[in-house]
Image (cartoon, rainbow, N blue to C red):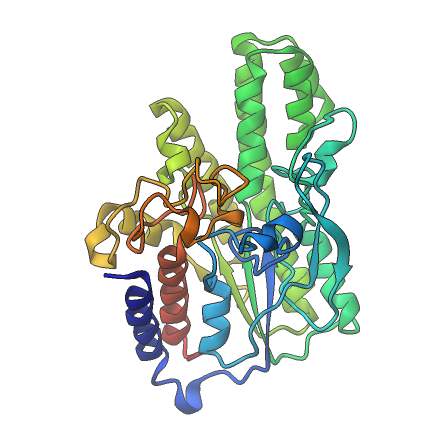
Length: 380
């Protein structure tokens, strides 16, 4: 089946799921989104990335799950609240940071719950890291939420659908700290700083060896639990307590079942899963009785992985985006991936665009699940 036909069929499924809301459906006039690359609708669609047809972390062009959900509740198409790219990679063109006051999708690739260091973030270009990287702004969710409140006078109207999904970049930075710890030295300390670990942990990993790795594992688990609890607290204090009535919070999918996870040894893959479930456990506990609609994408994603044909998935292990295509200047990264740079003419049934990000099919499946859960509670 071609990509267009497959997505048309899935879109029809969304319409069927959304039917039946009637008088019981919510009345909203906008969709507000906070998060990371999984919800980003074009923050970095500038410069070279825009020129090759990229801008979203999937096989471009496509609708992210947030765009599909917004369409299901009949709000305007989401647009990025901030655009720009602060790259320092030679030959790659970026753009100055620009705020768009009419737009309310604040999600940005590489963003963490509150940490300022994310994968390929511009903050890692300065000392002591001095990285040459893509230069993503990676504004944390703490700032995303406060920015929106300042824009709307400190309170929600109650007519917004709010979506929240984060935690993946907290995972990657914490896991990176573990991977570096055994080697000790400046590299281990730098990774610990980027992860957000305490000075005591930074000193512990500096020595390297098994003891350093153990200290890093403990620090990462504590950090992921704290991030999950912090995100729950932010949703309650900065969204629900400020007047939002319809709030969807999606937990962290099982990163251990991505191509990235599959590339790890069994012990490391198990550790990734533990970090994910630690985050999710604290997030769910913190949101209990809050009024937010908690979406268990972790369990749903595991079912998709175990039963791919049930969901129209033909490949859930191989990234659709080619790492060698000259049409993608970022060597397979989904942000610059298009149909012109996939590994085959037809990757419509693939689950992953790159090592961690979903294809259009993956986004549609997440949207379908969110919409179905919204219908269960009478929001559609």
